[in-house]
Length: 406
Picture 1 (cartoon, rainbow, N blue to C red):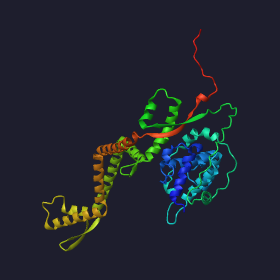
Picture 2: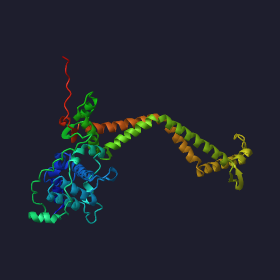
Picture 3: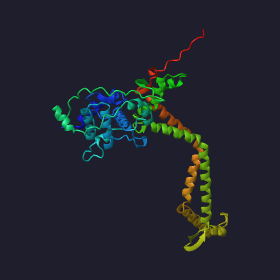
Picture 4: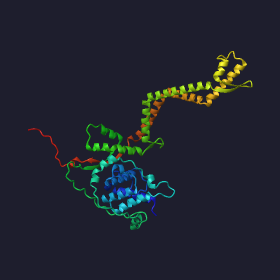
């Protein structure tokens, strides 16, 4: 019985065997070792994504309609593209059948194994289209692709339940048709594979004169750097490189805008203070039920103040008790009507204003430190990637030579 491990091995083997013919630029080492049953890794995901993009570009889909998933429609385009690139049909059937097998959702599982492991989004479509213009121009249509054969037929042919028979040698890819005369013919390109680190790229950017290959490497680098950064996690796996970059950006902006923030807090403080002053005035005029020496009185706090006066030293026993009851009633009103809660909020805003500079500065320094730690972790990583370089040496126009007048 064929297992998911068998499917992963077969899928990886097809990608490794056909990557150059199909125009997949992901290095073989990043896809994995032949016959490996390891899960789909980042390199294998990138190869799968490049293939589905190439198939749609070959079918002349517009950018707005290009997707990165392995839908039934996209799998049909992949089959056509693989056939047009000269891939043996056994390999085509094995690849698409294996993808569909891995994409079958098992009972009780929220996602298929393929959906769980295939990570898309690492390829910049604009750059990728430009890099593969020559490849796509040289891929001619070879007629409609045949209906797929089930995996069981491939395996039975090989006398195995898990592995197909080795595909016969794939014939040479269709030759690129001769260029048609045109007013502005496209220059040919050559595909190169190079290895750079972040500092290597910065050194290239700093050069006053750059070769055509160096210019092409710089164009392709950003997508490679994003792919490298997105494959890592930091802070114990809780944050991505982009998370830390965005956090640093937000902390910097918050520090730079501290003057605006302070003014906003000041406006908020003024509003809260004004609200509490108005509320207190209203509460002092609100009638309360007061009990003194067993007798009940209906008075507001202001009315009691008019009776007992401002000075307490000459209060009679009745006036003293009446004053205490009025003060107690006013405090209960402050609590129940939100006055005290607003006093706490006002205190918090004042503290926030007083510590604003140091808080924002500390936040910025901590965000900088976390980002710099992550950056240092990947700065020296060497990234191997392939890209197209315009081949000016293939031009038929003569070189311009400098000559001295005789």
